[in-house]
Length: 206
Image (tube, rainbow, N blue to C red; front, top):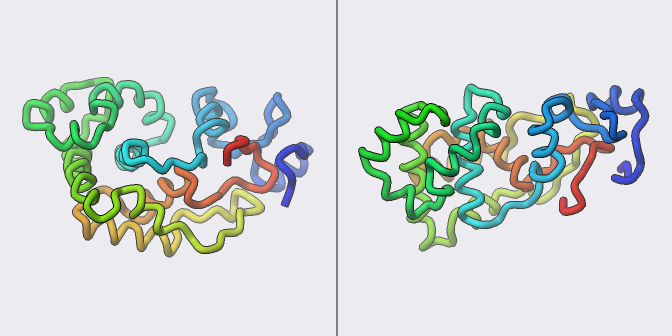
């Protein structure tokens, strides 16, 4: 495996489906141009998230992202946090029709009724998981026993057996908008699976 301190040449980066930035760091195309996405990739994406609130937020935002670009969601994240009480599961679980109307009228977020209702529902389901170990314990229990990081962007899958299993487990617990593709994206984002291509920039805490 390429050491994180070993820079790639333009030729090597291109061969792996990466883009070599002006800073000499290689990143996938999606994280190479928009400063917001680049900062997210450099400092958050793939860094382990193991707390309930953090995982509930990521799960919620991944659900809102379905059918949209991640850039759209990331730009709206401050507004999402304000609208959804910093994704405190206890607070969101108590949202009522007044909150639903408030959220549907909030032009700063994604005003999708089904996704808003799913987020409130998922907060309630998150609280119910506390008696059996909690959301973090459940989600991280689907971490693969072994995983080989991809050598090129073309090798990165969109689902895995574990993401299918996680989706089914969450659905049985009453969660919505947790399909296998969405759950694989979640697993990538919170560090459960490592899909950074060899030679790509990697934060020190991953």
